[in-house]
Image (cartoon, rainbow, N blue to C red; front, side):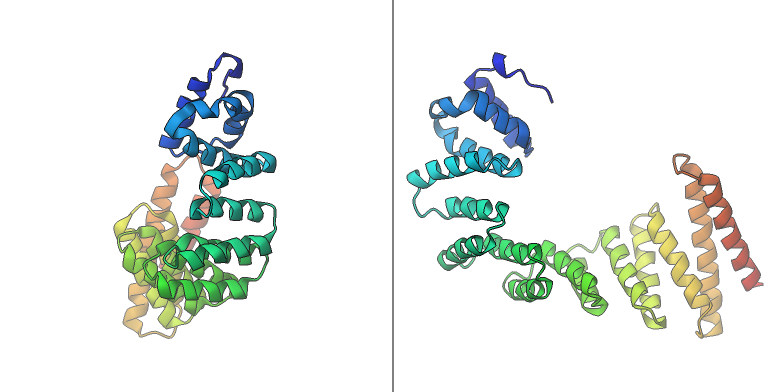
Length: 293
């Protein structure tokens, strides 16, 4: 985005900042450039929007590592609102951006002490532990957080990712099931849960994976990843020591999944090496037909 700073008045910049806020766009570099070039000396003219503009500039300055600007704007807000939790949050963000994690923790602890129902500083403390490479402590803190804020879907999703990084697939599966309870119509959540159960291995887990992949396809028939997963799950079960009738059922379902994958892939001409991919799918389909015979 190109802006001609020389032709913009302070009111034009104010209006532009307002537009970006309404669009929830950060545009950090442009915000900092316009602040320095035009609005910094005229911010007192913006009236009731002044505080919103200062907050917008603080975040943009932290994004672009202009800590001098962030410090100056934070001090202005601090003078007007001493002891404000909102201003304390910006101080913690600055410390975190500077990797001064101990100082950031102190500010966040002070915010929590003043408002125990405030979830944001607790989540920032967990993020700091992750940034410092202390993943086990971060998992413990996140578990404690979820005891107080059990309906936070993002937190359950994050805990799932942490457990996966630690190889704790059973616990990761539990977390994703919690996410599924909050959003049962998301094909991506069913798919993610299926992938975890498939990774855990064993007939019972792979059967569960097949069920979740099937539900993902029911919600979104064009989900290629779920089709591949269904094929892999059914192929595993077809070669397992399951009951003969179940093996035949798995072979038929695997064959159907491969046919669907081949059909969808043939339509996606933008995929690189498309012909090779289709040939490999046809070969896999041929192998399944041999097994079923």
